Length: 185
Image 1 (tube, one colour):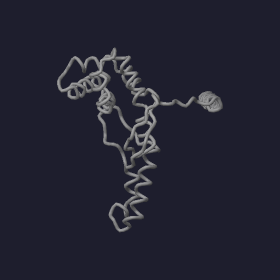
Image 2 (tube, one colour):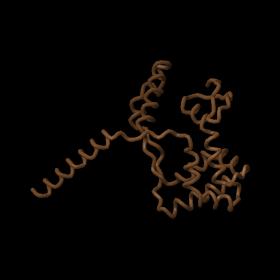
Image 3 (cartoon, helix red, strand yellow):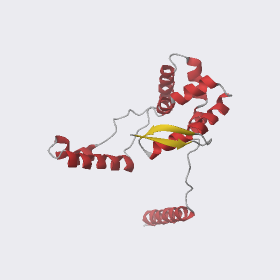
Image 4 (cartoon, one colour):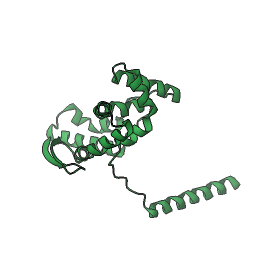
C-alpha cells in the first residue's frame, strides 16, 4: 500500500492510497464517472453519491446468476502468489501442495438462472442495498445499462486491429470450408 498523488481528469491533484496501477486509474476516472452519473440522474447529488458509494454492490447485483470462469490474469496472479509463498515458507502445507491448489482453483459454483430469476435476484439485492427503498431499486433496475455505462466512463477501449480482424475472418472461412468438406465426404 502506498500513498501517491494522482492528477484527476479535471486537473485537480489528490492524495490517494493505492495498491496498483488499476486502482490509481480508477481514482483518476472518478470525476468522469460522477459527471456521467449526474447527467443520468439530472444532477441529483444524493443519488449520485449513493451510486458512487455502492458501485461494487450494484455491479455485482447485475452479475447474479452469471457463471464466472477463472481468467488467465487471475490464474497468473495465483501462480505468482503461490511462488512467493513457496519462497517465503517452503515447509508450509500450501507450499508443498501449490500445484494441486493451482490446478483445482475454481470460482464457487453458481446455479444457472433464467433471465427472470436473474432480474428477481438483482432486484432483491438492490432493495437490500437501498435499505428497503423499492423506488430507488426500481429506478436502478430500469436504468441498468446507462448506470453500468456511466461506471465505465474514462475507460480507454483499445480498438481491435484490422490485422486481427482479417486473421479471424480467414480462420473462420477455413474452418467453414473444412466442415463443408467433411459433411460432403
